[in-house]
Image (cartoon, rainbow over all chains, first blue to last red; front, top):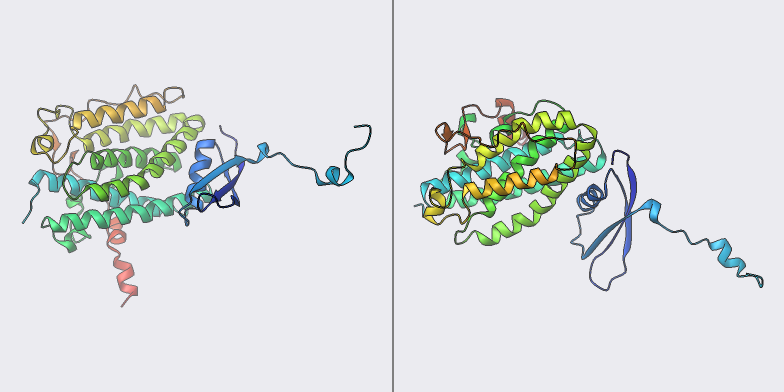
Length: 73
Length: 253
């Protein structure tokens, strides 16, 4: 709990809207990250606000996609 | 003029004054927290607390309290804030461990009010307070892991002060004058139990022990029911200069 983790912050204004990436916060716990996100991005009355640990984001590798799947894969 | 019992006017006055000083303390820390996010949280909380105070002062003016007096034209001993907020000595852990119990106690007292015309305001304040209290607890959890000794030492001072602010344990459903008058629906004894359970649960699996806290405070015979504390004292004159906005008024001339 003592180390800081980077969290990406996402939100949507209304139900059905696209979910937007707002920015990020650094926090020492998930609970604190949620409060930091709320305090930092509370100018809008969000329908939905979420944080995701940056370490948990799964990167889709565009180079691999462009090369396609070879016949022997 | 007042249609509340005198004790109810004092009760709301103490809640409003506690919020006024919490707002001031949050503003003082809003450029001195350990991270930018904590600074933003302090600024946000300070603004919201001042908003709550303005609404509560309006209710108190409806009950006959003078507006100028409410907004600061009074002596430190006439501010009925929770005593732990009079001054905060120390660093960040001390600040959080002082603000958090006072803020939670003030919210529980406000939430206990069952009076016509107060419901909408209390619901709105509760929406803000959810985030204030959740933030405090999240911060207390991290500090319990990092600085348990400092946190514990401060809580041993600030929790009894918050219990004094809530009221003596002898004020149960049969004897709490505000419950008897119908102004509140939850006795001080029940609020104390809810408050104590919360902090015992929060620190149960941490290195912070609350066994040294005086959970019986305050002594009912020594309790000042108007100021909701034991003993005298009050905020410093310099705090009052800032709360009254005296220097801002000089710039505005």
